[in-house]
Length: 75
Image (tube, rainbow, N blue to C red; front, side):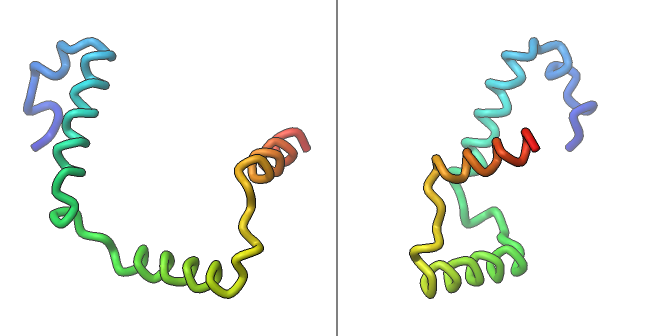
């Protein structure tokens, strides 16, 4: 189904479309088993978990991450 197949959606305001999107997303997320996870994602998560497990002290705090991001933006 494509958006142009539901003309009523085009008549919604932006806030109404956002609410509709939220409701659609919630209905998808409520049944996680129906959303396939690509093998590449699983491999990447496994890689990151293994790295964290072997070097747990290397994790950044939220504040440090924000500082590094802001520094990159300003440089």
